[in-house]
Amino acid sequence: MNDDVAPDSVRFEVTMEDLDALNEDFIVLSPFARRAMRRYVWTPPIGWAIIAVILATWRPSSSTIASFVFFALISIIWVLVARRVWRRVLKKRMRAIYREGMNRTVFGDHKVAISASGIHHASETSDSRNAWAAVERITETPHHVFLYVGTGLAHIIPRRAFSSEADAQRFVAAARRFREAAAGIEPLAEGYLQ
Image 1 (cartoon, rainbow, N blue to C red):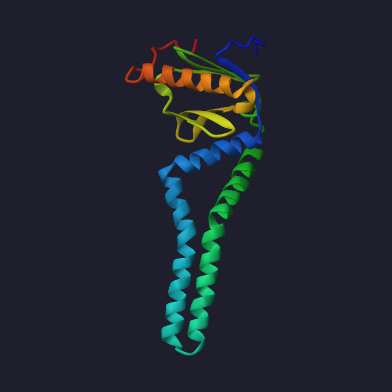
Image 2 (image 1 turned 180 degrees about the vertical axis):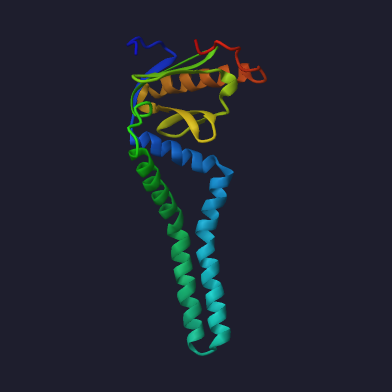
């Protein structure tokens, strides 16, 4: 990689925490992931409610109220902690997947440059370009900027790569302008990657 860094380019190291942040951002954006999380959160309490009703009708007694209270408390606790558990489980699984390979193109030093023609992303082991027409969305979190070029696939740009928040905002504003200017334009002709 060249050490030159233009105003619309940044250098940074991608870490496992950056990938965690991408996955978290994607989970928030994905309708499928949101539905899966709702099922994860609400299926157990619904199951527990069914069990409580079955127990109450099968063996009615003074302990029926105690059973309902027990299952209600368990359900409330579950609903309060389930999202955190869900995210922790997904994070653990994604980290295990990333540990299966060396992922030299994912981790390490990166440089991302933007211009009117697109995004140029380079690392020690890869070099790629995307036209703005390929950018599906641009999202920001307090610690990252994500330039999505596919489902769950994004250029990860940590905000720590910028010398100031103002520089980060200028970079994002430029990326949004380039993307908007390219809206409706066909992807660049063959040879764009050369």
